[in-house]
Length: 108
Image (cartoon, rainbow, N blue to C red; front, side, top):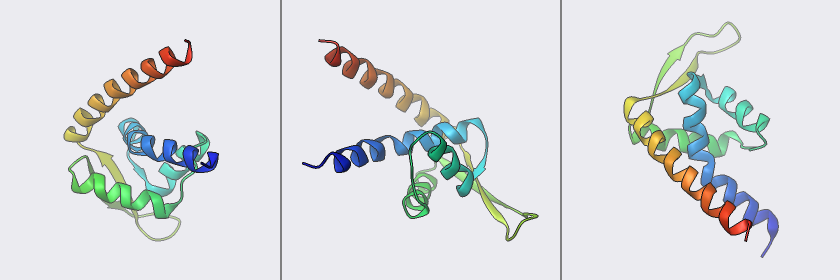
């Protein structure tokens, strides 16, 4: 088993959670989300991000609006919905449980 594949799978598993965390702070367009993820060492490309954003939007977790840009074409800004906030709260609880479990195993 290759370590790079294992690392990629671990990152993919938390990407949806991280997107919601970012959007819970402020509305963003895709490039801002990618920058935030890259700054946190979760490198992702548009080809990975857009399907996730579409899936989250279709599930009612996100909404979007178009805004004119002074630097090019209009930008699609994503925002977390009320359903998305509730979902994020549940993910946050699950994340904390997972971290606690892995930390417990790691300390043994």
